[in-house]
Image (cartoon, rainbow, N blue to C red; front, side):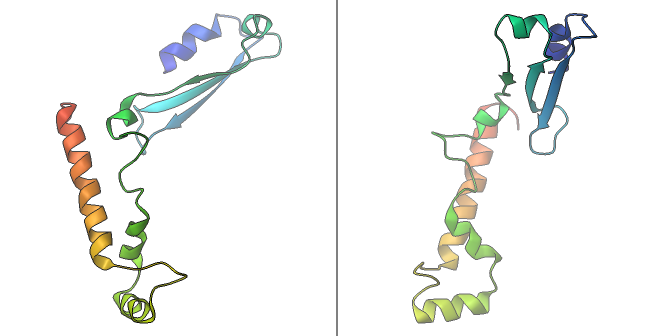
Length: 124
């Protein structure tokens, strides 16, 4: 991404271009970037006010806009087991049925999806 940023600077230091880098999953090599030309930059005069560049690496884990570990059942894994028993006895919490089995299954399914996607992409 820094190579792309360097090309947009166009060696015009006084008119500048603002770049923001957004690292993905705490990595330094995978990131998204936004560029905003300065008020007097030639690109701004050409009508380009804002650019976004997205890394395609997270598409490996994205299946039809459904990401691993986005299942609402996973929250159940963070709750003490004694509360599970009480909530199941009274019929759920705030109208939601709680099942430790569903939470574990959602977690294992997410892990399997990630492993399959990485193997298919040749990354592991």
